[in-house]
Image (cartoon, rainbow, N blue to C red):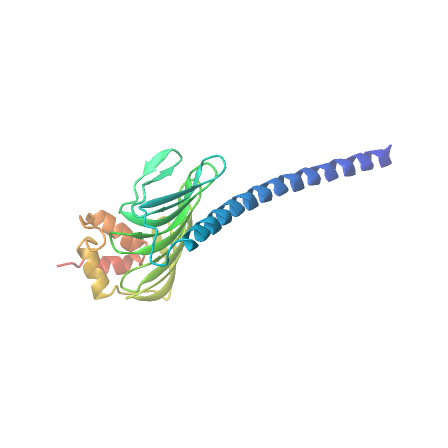
Length: 229
């Protein structure tokens, strides 16, 4: 009886593993099918363009690629619409142009875009509930890589105040290496002006302080903002 029980347990385990493999195979097949569709669309577009005269060009304001179910999966546009997260419209905060990717439900999951306000360019990667990764470069040559989950954030940034690695918890810098003891005059002036160079209407002091605390230690922000003339 014991041998039969062991054989039954082994058979159950094998069946469980087989089901897992089958599910993994279906997911992989679905991913390969989508990749094949996108590749086929790209090849078809290139082939069509190749038949045209060299001086011709394709000029459109938006191009949308859909999957076999008709769900938009890729959008290339000069004026991208706002994102829709869990059924809610989420404003981008600025006009944007570039490429946006969507998952099988049609929800935005990231993109490669330029924003009109601030003239920044960035690569974003989103979860189902919002953005989780950002790689952005500014027109002045500054750049930042941010990864976050919940209230925890890791940022690698290089700008006029130096190159540094910062860890934030609860919207405040908890650790920074090397630590920036004093914010540079240019950055401090931007904060005091409400960041109007990036947000035309400017931000109120509380919003500016919040942004400062996500980039610098509290003492450095206080020295800049509280000592303002």
